[in-house]
Length: 274
Image 1 (spheres, rainbow, N blue to C red):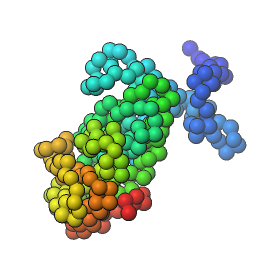
Image 2 (cartoon, rainbow, N blue to C red; image 1 turned 120 degrees about the vertical axis):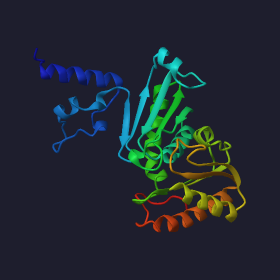
Image 3 (cartoon, rainbow, N blue to C red; image 1 turned 90 degrees about the horizontal axis):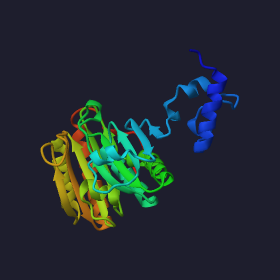
């Protein structure tokens, strides 16, 4: 049975207006300032749970305004919220966790689960699944947007080559995401120093710890603390200046070691750890 296209467009427009969703936000404007309705109607962005995507890490953000109680019972979470936010990606777990750490600081939300699938689209590291909870859908959607917008910053110290990768992260004040994922004390400076293949991460960790007086929270390796990824990473805390100095020292030796395997490792975005 054929469907009247004008009627369908009118119905979609009405639903969007009820939800306060702007077509302009969906980036569907054409050259004349109007909208290509065929593209819009075929777009998954009309799904009400959709918040946004980023090409970085193949990342998608979603919000469930009223999660089904049956699903909530099966999720591996200790706190129950009726509104859930979801940040899911194929690669860049540390960067996503750091981005979400900033998001929960800025919104009335809480990280309730973090999982690191063995993924990276065939690479040496992880993907990510991060769930946050809140009481208001607007708070949760705002947190997901903050996290998405932070990815271009937190990917600034992810360096890739054909042979492996390095990841460095730093925050002067860790929050709920860093605490849940890495055991970082909330309110204290935290640093992540990671190298792949895993042996490079071991040397990076040793260099970092020797460089500055920091507290070692843990060391993760393929069989301990990762999803069997080919990474070595140390988690550190302490004085902000010392943690930053240790992260920078680990980065310097890691770049030199990974370059010995062939290509010079490169970052796709400007470094934020200075």
